[in-house]
Image (cartoon, rainbow, N blue to C red):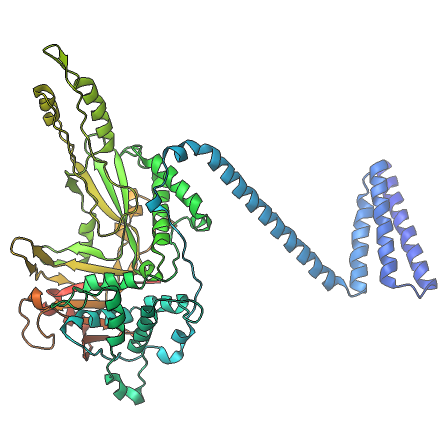
Length: 604
């Protein structure tokens, strides 16, 4: 009975308000219909609030009010406008809510990090030489995007000024074949907005000419040679002795010099955790110190699964800071990262060292081998004698301190503590520096301490190298040349390295996530590469019928390169030859014995 009376009461109020509104509209035509309906809705809303507060909850009256509002909006043809405004209001509200949540998250993260890692920051300060600075430039070179520069047919040859430019010619032909490298130049260089070194514009003109489009009707212009005098003159101002030597410079050394000279481009870091790319440089440095301290002497073979997140974060931070230090899109394109894992045979502690590389150097033995097998040997576990375990060293120092105080003839001998070099330098190192150290033990002054020190030997360690981050363009150098300091001669190994240029090279199995046992597809980064260039180091003309052993004192270089339409060409400085069966060519001794520098582009 009470519920029925409430329903009748609410329905009566609605009828009264609705009829009063209709009476006003019939007798007063000057009033705006929508304004009258608006006053009606306001009065109903006030009635609902008043009755709800002092008597009961008005469900029926609320439903009638909503239906009345929808009917009025539909009658007055303002329903679509109202819906659009409601959508706009919801969008603005959600955006403000999202910004508020992000601000709170950043504030809480900074607050907790500030108080949780204060001791670590005070104990370990990042050295000045490891501080980094950003060199970000949003550039775009429009002249490189012209449709007339799209590569369809073979490129023109390069005029060889003298014998020492042979390696430079072949290297430039190979670089011009790299589509992703050329695309990065298009996106990141704008000569009209920024001031670059003169060598940058000269290099752009040279690459543009080498990738010039030769239409079928203008194929005769394909024999036009491209001059290098301007580029060589500007390169000689930076490296005066590079191309003035009596012998041809090594193509790998020349590639490194060019990347150093063109160090004026922007950089973008590639990491697993994309949130790290949004953090400030100071915050990244603090995270690096904290992560390094977390891994120091805490990772063993038994608990490595529990430390996986710290290992991944350590690699991400070193990779990001390395790219900020480079400051070059050119180096970023060719730059990768190695991860060295050192495991002590005695205490089972594992230490890590991240090392950047731009050229992946693979040693060549005297046995015929495929390139895939040679890459698999990169992860081979090796025993290391010259690196000492820091955890074992700290324990040994404590033992020697207790035992070195020996009483002899009524006197106390001076304590002798061995000075052991650390396991590895975990800071970022240049790729050409060796990651090794030798343990040096100070010589004691007595027989007892001498026997004690000589009885101690640094424990052997196991070392394994994996790929931490893959480059966009993989440059592989086959280490065929060996220098003998006694005879002062360079010898070359003519070992057969079998290459399959049409086969996709998959390197996912040598990534560090595979070593950690991560099977989550989101954590495994695919690494599939397609070969685009092969630089051969040969002392004879590639076009000749005889292919004898090469003389390193008179190096001659030729290259095989792939065009945009997957057609292969042979370039021997001023000569170019179309290759129809590249697989058969790569099986010949002239390729397997002389392949030296290989270029691979990462498949999208």
